[in-house]
Image 1: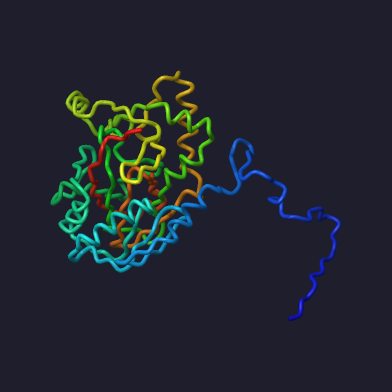
Image 2: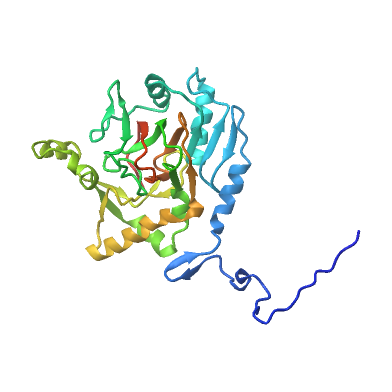
Length: 326
């Protein structure tokens, strides 16, 4: 075996002899208020997920620790209890799972989601007229998308959704992707000071900021009685995995309790930005009859609103969850 020596030609403008990262000893550094660098705490979870075997379907992983497309499942056909159990496990492991080419009828959509629990009725978003359990997002020239903010769904409820099943009924050729961010990773990536804060504080959640305009003045007292402001911990323990996750979002979280307004706003801003790390995310490009099923506790989602004036029609069935606990 022969080797060829590598030769280089010196240039007067080049002073570097190593990659810039070789001069940094810690995993992440601050650059103008932003933490950059390799996110090392993802490695163990990434390796764990890669080692799992799935008897009933093939898995195509998307992000480092979040997102997987399940191949070989027909949601329109009969689904055994064993298959449902494995889909449930995949949901808990990958935080969000996807299926392609699933031309679900409304009844099939509702029936699949109901295999995982009781379904919610959403008071503030129109439904499929034939299936009240299906929230219908119909974006057009006159109805534009306002879901392009990181959020958990319906945290204004005392018992927010456990998860949601979203079906792409009509989608644009390009744009309109949905992104998901791992809230376990977001929590684990906080500084020690931030972790102590979220582990010891709670926040108020309310529907008014996002859905107040949907309520007629004469209905407001009735809706406020049905859906008063609720208090949830800033970090919660997942009831199945036992892992702690961040639980705060700019759509429904009003304020942090037990601190002054300035501290509340500063900490909320810091915590909201935790979802922004691309390393915590996966991105799903919709095709007609694609399906996404996400764990509404373990991840947040963001619907990219970049397809106007094309039409995007989605239907969602949400599964009732329990009250978040520390």
